[in-house]
Image (cartoon, rainbow, N blue to C red):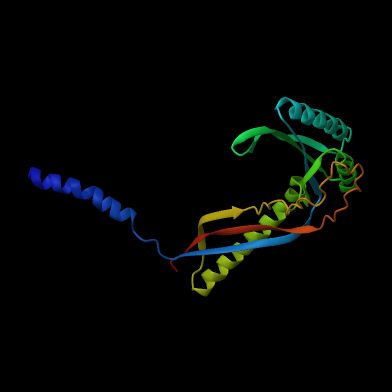
Length: 231
């Protein structure tokens, strides 16, 4: 018969033994990574322009900005191959010696198109009244997805080939995948060209923007952990 103090000690010891079992080190495991890469054509031109005005009160510059954006949107929406999106609308107090001397209002519009020449011509027209914030080529989501499956297959194939080579080199007949991560290599947009075509309010004609699309690298990386067989 187990006495109560001994029984209590055994009950306390059981969770500790269970935790010790769970914390048993895992052997015969190897971490590795592989990747696949290709050059992808930049096929999407993205431009951001903004309207800005200042005045002694907030109402006057707000009206000016609203009128400018209405004009710009009407012009941009006339191009069916151009996607148009308005961005932030901001009103800021302008200070002089800690006193408000006026108000500044601005709003941006984002334009994108796979027809770079068309968008370049539109941007030139808009620069008659708006100012350029940024313009650059990048890879469209459709273009990226065309290459994603092939790159993923290549990267996984290389991962498996290397895993088999490691197992063979260590005298093991097989392996199993314990953990696997896939980074689809979603690229950030190409660096924006800022301030390259700022429009002077007195300048009423701007030459169309002509940019080379170029390419950028797309990468899929696979990393994980394998466990080698015992024999």
